[in-house]
Image 1 (tube, rainbow, N blue to C red):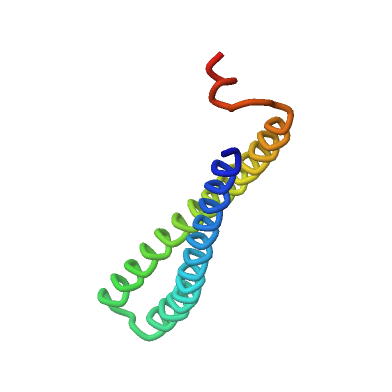
Image 2 (cartoon, rainbow, N blue to C red):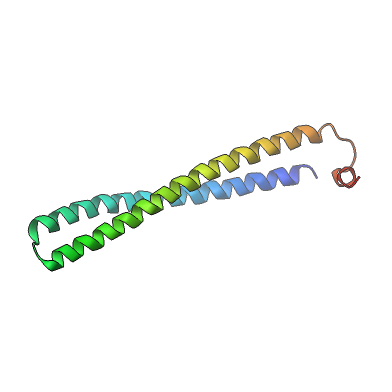
Length: 112
């Protein structure tokens, strides 16, 4: 019965890792789009000296600000997940080590 919580941690960790990998792929696509948006903004600024060009560049810059915000939040998420993963791994390891010292049903021991 002591293996079940640890197995759940491993499954959750695997799902989390897969989700982060998929998110990383999406963010790489966004990074390529960001680079392309810089090129497009430069081309528009060089070739369209009009109100329409200025408005288009403003929309690109707005998208770029949003992109930078998403990237900053993603970095915070990765940092937090890394810390959480370490705590979960350490806690699971400590729990396993401590469970070996206990005799009897863990629920009986904890209810005392």
